[in-house]
Amino acid sequence: MKSYDWIVVGGGITGAAVSYELAKKGLSVLLLERDAIMQNGTRFSYGGLAYWSGTTDLTRQLCAEGIERHRNLSAQLDADTEFRELDLLLTIDAGDDPEKVAENYAHFAIPPQLLSVAEAGELEPLLNKSAIAGALTVRHGHISPTATNQAYCQGLARLGGTIEIAEVIGLITDKNRISGVQTVGKSYACENVVICAGGWSRSLLKAAGISAGVYFSRAEILETEPVDLKLRTLVMPAILKRFELEAQSSKIEVDFLWDEPGKELLPPILDSGAIQFNDGSLRIGQLSRTLSDLNAKVVKRSYPVGNRQTSEAAIRAGIGKVLPDAANLPATWHDCIVAFSADKLPVVGEIGSRPGLHVFSGLSNPLAILPALAERFANSAAGEKDWAIEILSPNRFV
Image 1 (cartoon, rainbow, N blue to C red):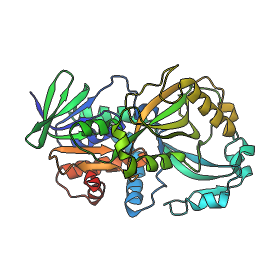
Image 2 (image 1 turned 45 degrees about the horizontal axis):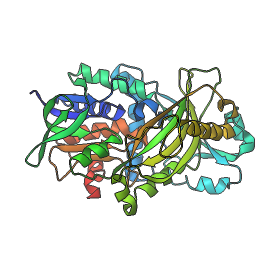
Image 3 (image 1 turned 30 degrees about the horizontal axis):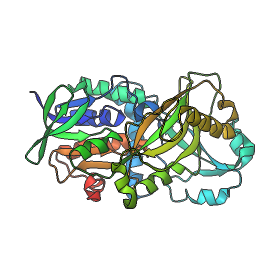
Image 4 (image 1 turned 120 degrees about the vertical axis):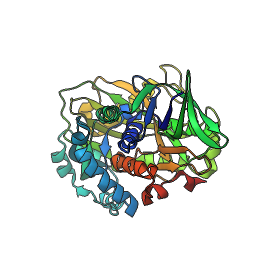
């Protein structure tokens, strides 16, 4: 049985970035991904890079490092990540006080600028001005997550890393130390395992008897083929309900519900937004649910709460209020699992109670920090102490 320095579980953009950075250190790396055709958070992400959104010394530093890396990543990886910078338009619902909404962003590294209804309409001509009381705007990064994921994987291969399609079903232990992983048909040995499986990280860690503060929501979006409609900005609501959903569903009082099958912790929420990719396709969403079952299936006629038709109708109705021309575009419904943590920060580092086991999850907000944080993680793996990794350690939830 071949042994590796590191096995990375999860081949989405997070696992690919971590694998690449570890291989750059001269370490032997095996990247394991369950699906040959990705259906994960990377595949259906908006790809936004909120590098302006740091609110602490830690997040401001990581955002600054992250966007600098993103700006140079295509050249470094010798592949196009489709990086660009565009205007983010944060819509303020009619009836809300624009000044009060703007105050919520005053402590951000780069506070967004408050726009009048007329100014917002000039910035995004497709906007339904009668539906808003104003908007906020700030320059925002954007990538194709799938193109970036592929670029990282190609970079890993050039460095001698190995990528295999295999579903990890368990961890191998030697006394208390993690010494490898077990897939459906094979065992792999290693010195270290890092779980980069997004929302599925919780399930893998739980199977090893570990709780690391990682949770997941189920995101539902609509995706179009390339269309003639031209969206100038990335449109999102200024008040994102998803953050409150995550905060409430990760409270200690309800934590036990995550381990009970078939539970919905809170009612679903809708944050109506849209982004157009370079090829002209749109992703429109997002409806978010907190279901305890990772394997819940949204099918045409049955679902724990609602079904695909009702979800799609809700998403179309929501986007129709702010971008009427996008509401009736032919589109395909998709869902995926999105990881988050109990304190909004990523969960990154070694799990103290299980030597050899690490986690790198909860980076949906903001995706901008991923390249910098992956590099810091690899530096830490090579023996360099890193203050950011120490702060983000999963041991903070013990």
